[in-house]
Image 1 (cartoon, rainbow over the protein chains, first blue to last red):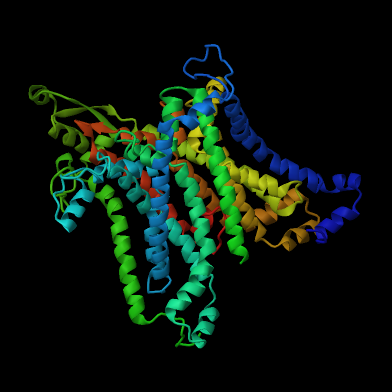
Image 2 (tube, rainbow over the protein chains, first blue to last red):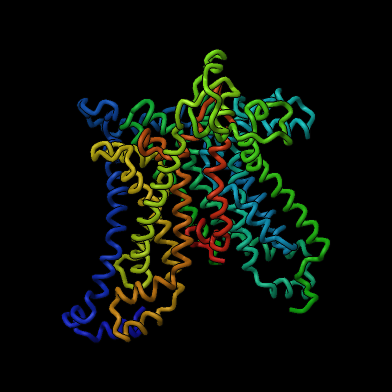
Length: 315
Length: 313
């Protein structure tokens, strides 16, 4: 910001003097402060990314580092985009993404709306509800396999208790139809509080006087909800969906511990599939191309989404 | 505010809302309660049908978590001197003797070393960068900030391929240093974004007054800005710590022995015929409880932390 005292002092002082008076110039300090972070990110993020791009044009296999590496052009990309198994993986991911986002938005918004009724002790209960999302997904996911066990598992027992079916008659994890829902349930359990917290911030940002004005105009509560509450919370909700969308597109730890991608490959989300290609089949070049495709997809979808989000915000 | 407000929900509405929220909270806590309870069950109680809510508490799970045991014949057991400790007695009850400590302690320690190491480094680098972004005209500032954030969009597995090769070349595979550097690189985006928000909130006038009083920039930074940002730095540190603590994908791919953290280890605790659930639950309890405590401490800044500072209450 120009015009602050420090800036004016800095500008009025000749550079060679400034150096002697203050040790370093602001510009130098700025670079000293930012450089280590940028360097670390270049070394651990960008350099590997470039390396991945390079590998994606080869047939390199990391388990045979001494074998000669051939550049095979775009063949990896071609293979991935025409592979029907990968499209099945994408479908599993889409199913997972759609339903987790759907449930988390519906339940999360409802909870936030209820908490915003400002009943006694709402802060305490908010903190309690939030707990699952802060825990290690791998450790918690692993324990859910215990809850999901037929007969002895708590989940099956409760479902049986409420519906009257035999608790050993269904397997959440071993069943081709139920397994995709098993992972949706656990992810929803874990991450609904995330959406709830953001929605709550949105609801609390709406000033009371808007409702008061609507009340004076005799707008019904229903109308107030759709014309005030929903539009004002929408930018917050969309932000929550963006975060959850990116996270769940990358989903690995929770699902790998829950189902390991099975049974068969019905819950094999893209990250699990990628891990299999890269670290079990050791098709490093192929997996690199796969990684690039995923990155471009996330980045592209996120950019489009952010544009839409900004439009909603402007309204 | 007046005692009567048209926007204030009626007491019946409040009561209904409160009941529903508490009902949800109870359901959502069941799995966590079950982890806690299972840790204190005997293996037989843990897998009984119907699931036992009331049971006689036992420390067998915790003993099994920290020890490795070998089975002995009844004759061998007879020949042994009487057990010296309570945990030896529990193990003997199952016709076994303690063979040695398990790896859980080491893995937990690794989680602590890597967690605190990477948190310290992220906060150190992050605070410097955040201060620069907040106070100076850094060229391409917005682009750099976005670049820092975008590094979070890569799926960890995708990054893991070249990191795996790079670590192998540099001899960093399965080392504490490698994991600390890696987690720092992942956490630094969060640290920079959150800390920039916190530092932005500190009025510039404080530093300007200090500069006029003859402080150098460095002095103004650590004598004026840092103390003001202490709360923000502390909560950012907790977020970094929790991330490193919970991380699984990199840990499972890049560590196997010396530097393995607890999350990849806990699911591998096995007993006779499958996972030893009381021991797994005991390990999970010890691992999860610190995070729960931190979450409660952090509750005021939670929203900010999980949204990279995009939403502030």
